[in-house]
Image (cartoon, helix red, strand yellow):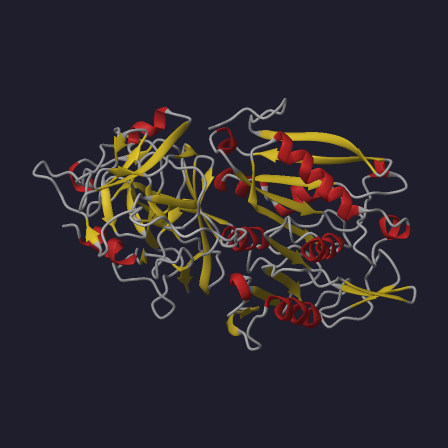
Length: 561
């Protein structure tokens, strides 16, 4: 009766800050630096009202762009709202800034900022100091990414501000080159810096192989190749010389491991990729390159950042100190492993230390048929309410967020092990936080999806267009009838209060059913969708399920023929 539930188990303060608001939204602000009025926009996510410390991502626009254009094109705000981090969109400089055609001084490029030797590294440092004095920024989770000239800036900040940035992710940039006969390359930073590089092999603005881009509209210069950037960061971080390589479609991933302080270097090369942000919006200008949609650079970069907080030396725990400790960013969706807000009924996993027994203890049902709220002396308390428990070990525990959380804006999460409680971690409550279960329970790749005939969907057993597939998720939020904590779904069918939509490779799919699962506990739900006849066949069709304003993260796929 509870087959699916068993299968899934196997897989798987707010504080006031000066005069600045923590109400969600975009806030345009200015400051004076270097004799210039500099501008930026900060996006505040709903979770910032609840979190004591919030990660921050700085996104640097490309040459001739601006912060507003970057926000619209690269779609970071929905991810920030889902995951709970600030996004800051600084503006570069120009002789005519009102036109919004701005550049950065990356050391050898570009245009006004380079020609006037604008101190953009100094500006970024001053901006971060201002933000940290006004918002609850986590100093160990500050990151930089950017596109084109902004990617060059991200490289430079990784080198010259490694004391501030925990990791950087340049998209279609270079570490240096030659401008009007003057050679430049970013200096070696004093510490390892995790770096993710994304670059299209057909880029004609900043060529993958280096040299002078035939379509560059910024300046007459040559760029160093991507291989030199990879070698620079790999050497600096003390990584292995040979990467682990994998390929999916037109995307090749080279991951360099065994790095000092886990400062990984990862390269995503897109065979047919041009000078565009992968997964971004189509360019407005007719001359702009069309993005690749085989991956979402924004989702990819955030996943990399989330896995690489700044590592600081820590003192060993005192002898006999066995108090549970929840890791920073350690409260995640059990299907996607994404942190941020929680939703009522969502199955969450909590990572940390001393959380539970040394060996795995699995769920149990009470005589009344509900999931027990304690396993081997371990409990998860959500604002004091004991959550139905899924499993518990010393390093991670899992349970369902009580539906009562839906009446609150923020909740305190505590893990209790044998009567000893962890420090509370405050998180925001979202209306929904949907995530698809994947077959290898990594949060990406083929999903836990069944074809219309009841067989498991796979590349060897794809679904036919026009047929119905069944997908399994968690995080749908409140239900009707109201969900009962820990109650098996076959006893009381429910459906999400919020509307459900499905997209396959961006194509809308008819939703045939969305609701509880007969063989699972309340909090795991099923969506049946009909595969559109016009959908192109592929062994890895991207699946996105939207529940209200919440959407599943990019990465789970279904095979279609």
